[in-house]
Amino acid sequence: MSPAMNCDAILFDLDGVLVNSAARVEATWERWARRHGLNAEHVIEMAHGRRTIETVRLVAPHLAETDEVATLEASESVNTEGVFEIPGARELLESLPPERWAIVTSGIHAVATIRIRYTGLPMPKVLVCADEIENGKPHPEGYLTAARRLGVDPQRCLVIEDAPAGLEAARAAGMPSIGVVGTYSAEALSIADAT
Image (tube, rainbow, N blue to C red; front, side):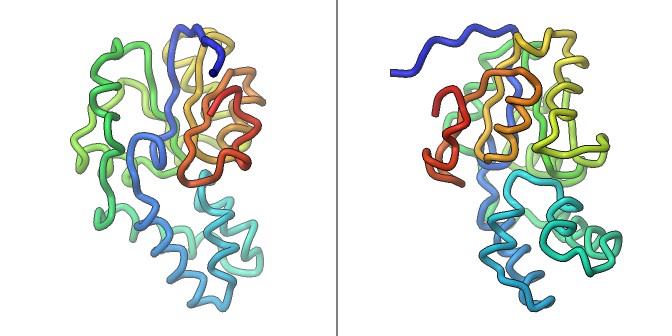
């Protein structure tokens, strides 16, 4: 049994928590990895939960990152094939006061909004995207930005994440977290306060 967690706000990751886009993300990165002669499995492992720019820097520092990121993000911002709502996500979000939840995603604004609209999820009052911050997950900047925009003490925010990088960001921000098993195993999410 998981411990009870009290909070004033919930900060959700988007992909893997509210929206299932794993097939879309993996297809994009696999195609890109093959084109550059990289190990697709390794690239995909690094990509989940990270901003595109940070993934490119990690797996292919020899490439022109600006061009590669632009190509990858352009593809993701117009394609919804293989994207769908995680069961129960809409009901959960609709049950929360709008000023008490936010989405913090490693995707850019265009990708996040197309996925939220396509799945019919409510648009959050606070949406923190990769192209609005300097440092992506595992850095805490995104989660701290969401707490500030909501006007909530970071230690009173609960993070719901599906990737180790996001859980590390929550920990660095001083926020308790729940790891959602699916993209990664429970063992990979062991940094979370509960899974």
